[in-house]
Image 1: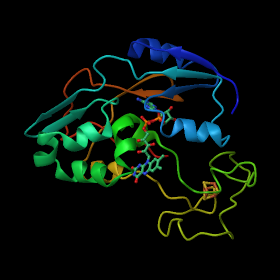
Image 2 (image 1 turned 90 degrees about the vertical axis):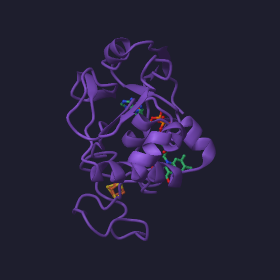
Image 3 (image 1 turned 45 degrees about the vertical axis):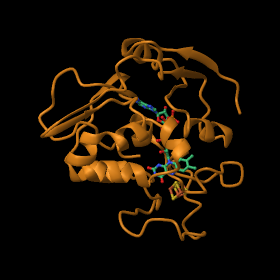
Image 4 (image 1 turned 135 degrees about the vertical axis):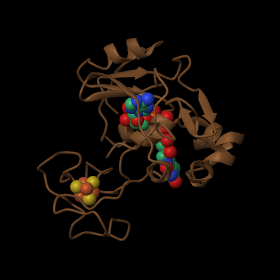
Length: 207
Ligand SMILES: Cc1cc2nc3c(=O)[nH]c(=O)nc-3n(C[C@H](O)[C@H](O)[C@H](O)COP(=O)(O)OP(=O)(O)OC[C@H]3O[C@@H](n4cnc5c(N)ncnc54)[C@H](O)[C@@H]3O)c2cc1C
Ligand code: SF4
């Protein structure tokens, strides 16, 4: 793993400013980022720990909408009584995902931002060609072992699947995401400043 600097952000504003640093990456629960750093896919120069930002773990559910903070833990959202009764697909999708230990650590923002589990993507030492990792380098999966790859929605450049379960349920609820950014490349999922118009306020970015 490459050496990196560690910064702790105590507000969305601080995280947003720090995320403008070259090579900066956000750390929430760390259950994906640490894996990606270990296998050499993520090589942050600076890791910005956002896990202590107050208020970003809030879960606010009313009869017709759910507002879920980016730092809400997967297990807390899955077990929230109102989410369970009013948005059961969200709760069930979270319960089906990963393991209890991971769900207790992992956050909703991190879940939506997780990267594909294509094994070629996660093995840069043996498979340098991966358009998702290095645009223009090719795709090692095409012509390789593809049992876990996509059947629909593929392209000549990439046949990876999106790995998350939550995002699929959120699409069904026409969810939206609220984010703050220092630049178009660094977005921090956060709590919304005003109530949004749709049923749920966190949505899936294309990864
Ligand atoms: C063994 C294993 C099994 C798994 N199985 C499943 C499964 O069945 N279903 C499923 O859906 N998921 C599964 N996952 C993925 C898991 O849900 C994610 O690792 C987790 O949700 C990531 O959340 P985190 O808070 O730990 O993110 P981190 O690891 O801290 O961050 C992940 C990424 O998101 C970025 N990020 C984090 N928070 C924010 C934010 N607020 N704004 C912008 N960017 C942000 C980080 O920079 C990083 O790139 C599995 C993971 C593992 C390790
Ligand atoms: S399928 Fe996509 S992620 Fe996997 S090796 Fe090909 S380009 Fe990379």
